[in-house]
Length: 101
Image (cartoon, rainbow, N blue to C red):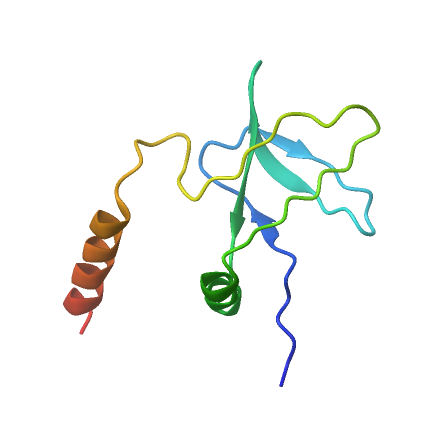
């Protein structure tokens, strides 16, 4: 059985306006939205990672820093949009799947 890749990959997103450069080895480049208050990145899970997360229900955030730890938060909804309920999201996905059959 193949081991699940547990490190998530950052992805580009519509509101990104800056590229944070990695070191080319263990730290990858990352697209972010940045203003005077926030630096926001977007991460996507593979279906295997999503299933793993469904059962483990934990996310670990690893922040490299050489000063006091900055305030951070992790979200499952985009901070640029009004969040909808989980039930609404699942209903929409169900209708989309029904229309593709």
